Image (cartoon, rainbow, N blue to C red; front, side, top):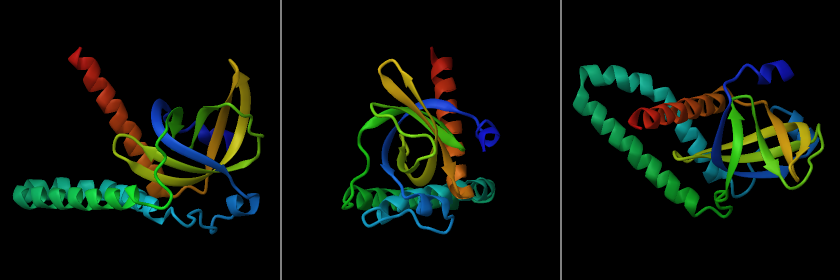
Length: 187
């Protein structure tokens, strides 16, 4: 697994994140659901983001043939997204609201923590990618916990991540990089 983590593009950025300990049996079982009461609507954001990513090539093709229909479908996509965000904002378990600096890839993430997390322990990660507010519920395993400047640097790998979730992260990282380059060109 260590080699696999290095196969993905990594980028430092701010995300909203919540982590909780996860039972090893649940973490290592690919069929065990991660969603608990109160996180079903949060998962909706992740599913919508995956569908949005999947539909982009179809919309690009449609735009060439029928630009007006394409604009209408993009508006409908945005409307659905706004309704989903309103639902999630009223969830019993609110979205993570504290932004955290992380180093993220499609294979895992690292972040600072005031507490040491034992290598080999399992975590439930509720991640909100910003600014698009794509919500992800992921299982992870702590690979390394290193003390640095009075806090701990926690490095995790994602377990049993679905291809749609991996695609959401990859697409997000590409968009962040594009925005960063555009801002550099404006300077």
